[in-house]
Image 1: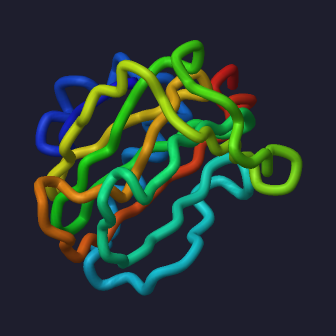
Image 2: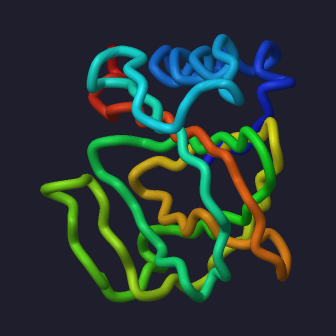
Length: 159
């Protein structure tokens, strides 16, 4: 997992693989607050972004998840949310396997989960070995969040 802000990206960008840099550049170069929810191609199916607006939920109502083909760059446009993070080896039993159809595997629980609160302007990169529980309340109250999730194909990292 990588945690950062777009405010510092000029200092860090050179340390990221080119495909992650492209995903972060998409976030920097677009007025995300004015864009409609939906899917946006960055580099075909190798790199694309999904924008969504929603209400956070209590962590107990969200399931830990991970992906295999894509890593996530989760970026908060408005609001704040907590994302639980943990190691794949600490994930509990598989609750639902949608890996073939949707590149997502849900777990029933995750031991030693670390809460990470993302606020507007912050991003987190979750690799396939990073189990994460997104869209959770940052505190006790539900709040409105607008988020971009940039999906970067793992195969694009070697280019």
